[in-house]
Amino acid sequence: MTIDWQKEAENYRDDLLQDLTTLLRIDSARDVAHGTQDEPLGPGPAKALRAMLALAERDGFKTLNVDNVAGRIEYGDGDEIFGLFGHMDVVPAGPGWDTDPFEPVIKDGKLFARGSSDDKGPSIAAYYALRLIRDLKLPVNKKIHFIIGTDEESEWVGLNRYLESQPAPDFGFSPDAEFPIINGEKGIATFKVTFKPVAAHSAALTLTSFTAGIRTNMVPQTATATLTGDVPAALREALTTFGPANGVTVASQDTASGLTITLTGKGAHAQEPRGGVNAATYLAVLLAPFGFDPAGKQYLTAIADLMHDDSRGHKLGIAYTDKLMGDLTASPDLFSFGQDAEQSVMINVRYPQGTDAEAIRDRIETTIGPDRVDVAIDGHAQGPHYVSGDDPLVQTLLDTFHDHTGLPAHEQVIGGGTYGRIITRGVAFGAQMPDQENVMHQANEYMPVADIIRAVAIYADAIARLVK
Ligand code: ZN
Ligand code: ZN
Image (tube, rainbow, N blue to C red; front, side, top):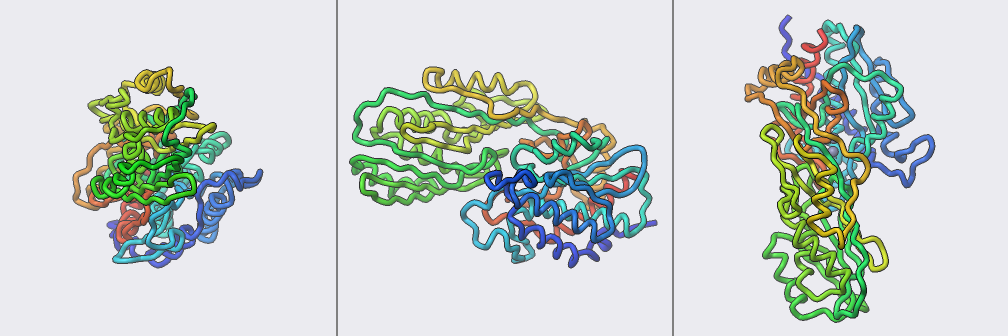
């Protein structure tokens, strides 16, 4: 039987968009501050999970809800389990949106909403691929488990909880990255750099506070500093010239005792810091030349000298490249400074095979100076992950992608963090097309509707080949 996958996928367009809209309207960012015993990650992630499972139940699939933090949609039977791994949580909307991030809008064929490309759009495409396979009654000789997490953007609480009580699939893919494939992912670790107290002495200017960032995996879009004291004319001058000279926006407001400065750059996913403009390191560069109090000076100087424009970690002394997996990347993402309060920077690092989190920690501390900082690995480091290009899973997915698009299909390693790494034979497959800009985690995130439908076709064909 020859199947016109694209035509079959088109048949679901209206239903799919309606279901996707339902999911996108739910703000499902992690919100543990409003967590309960029943919904530990907050109301949003649980609500989105239940909404996704409700769609599957409506369509007659068997589902499982694991403690409101993960779920499963099941189809087919056999000895082996083929897994799909999607997620219903999103990163916070953040500033800079032209439309309501939780009210999906289609403009010029692009569907704008937080989660449209990461990962509700690709997840719903994978779900409709399952529906297509079932509706066409294609042969299925494996158990298909579509596993849905709700904490992919943070600590993977959901998927880890799932695997405590449920069987891990034997092989599978996550629709949560890009085509042609991601069969290798760098290791990921976040390092907390805590500055040590320094003896205070009087200074013309005091850095009262410095804050930036909302997540350890996002380049901060805005940064704010509060100063007290006499603001020198040269700093006032810099406030007007720095922005235009550096492609950022600087706004300031006089306060009773000094000045508040807000700098706006561009947010981006931390796995490629070059995709963003780090507001915090730019703000430190702007402020560092002016005579601050000792603690403020120590903080601003370290950021300006050792963290600014350093996506490969050269200044921090952690640069490393592996032939297969590429460059280590470093992204300082969370900044917190107060006099008599925490003075810290969280640096998110993606590292290839050949180095490890302990060695990176040691080098960051040595570079900034053990007399000035303590450096600790925040939470757990995840090691690098790689599935060979010779694995039939990788071969089948690449063949399918090529058959549908005519585009070159090749192995790819990324900064990582997809669910592909949760099992030994796990990869990420789509749904971002190779010519499509990566807008995940950014303001005005979108996904072209045509790419969502195309992903349904590619996923259905790929899954059919893998489970027949
Ligand atoms: Zn994702
Ligand atoms: Zn994400």
